[in-house]
Amino acid sequence: MPRRSSTPRTRSWSAEWLPASVRWKRPATGREAIRPLQRDIAAAPGLCFTVPSISVNGSIVTGRYEQQRDVFRARGIERTVLYFMVQVVLDGEIVAFFGRNDPTDPTARLAAILAGTTPPGPPIPRPDPVCR
View 1: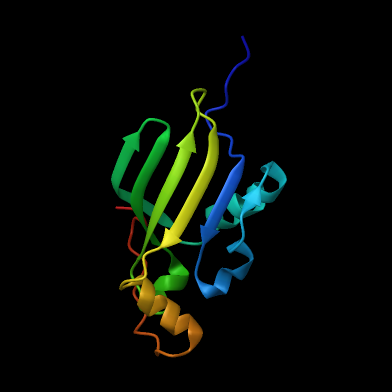
View 2: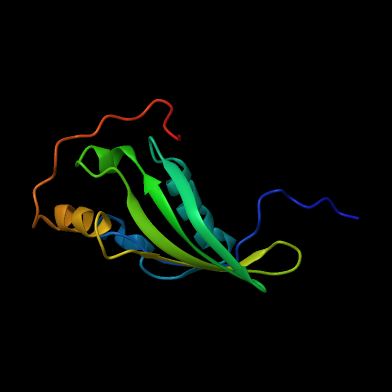
């Protein structure tokens, strides 16, 4: 029996991110399109993800996650809030991922800062450790 990887495979990735990441606004399908997105996320300095809510209904997983990054802290934003929906098949393969920003604060404030319509706040220092 072949050994299964501990990292799930993903066939389709669709996410709407903030204006600074325009290249992520269209769906990415297939390993070659998804891997660069995963590498970008993993390489972000001071990145921490927290999943405060998650729900499973059959093969569909939905939830809310918060992300903290140094680039956000530099603009006075501690975290952003996003919602996701994932479809997972029986062997653990992720066949679809959909992510959307929560349009309420603090995500809306960060979008306004990036659009130049709101001034950034004072920088927030990176916590030690980064993830609490």
